[in-house]
Length: 109
Length: 112
Image (spheres, rainbow over the protein chains, first blue to last red):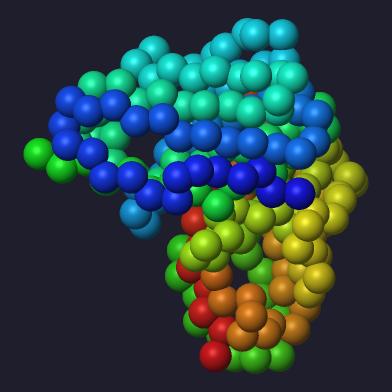
């Protein structure tokens, strides 16, 4: 079952902040975040593991609420390079990812 | 450098034809995955493999098959292509669930 992402789209000016949310109805082992530029492959940003460990991008932060099965990705002081579609992928301990429908982020100068 | 490649990058075929998309990775990852990406649906899992001779169905496996005869390759076959299978296909590989999946560049398939 696919996780639910919100919002579907967000428009920012350089320097502004945004939060992307991802929620699942199933118990999760980990949450992965990827960013995809138009016409390119998804690129890994971060993994959040059950128990609180995080692995990934130094300039992007995220949280994982295990009780609520929710994760949030925080884009802080956005740059033009942050534009793209962000996907969360939820994993239940079986190495498979179920991806959300994506959040399109547009950062304008 | 280790990498994951897909071929062809673009393919146009006709309804009813058999099509095979190739995926090759040089990381020696045991786990390999095939996804399709359509507007509004994100990435949906077609088939996956945890190792040689192991294959499993994902959420949208109807009309697709895979085989895993070695660690490096997981070809995806459309037995009889349908217009509904027009999509962008991504292959990915990983060590395990606590590490990232590496995605290939994608194959854009059009079924006429």
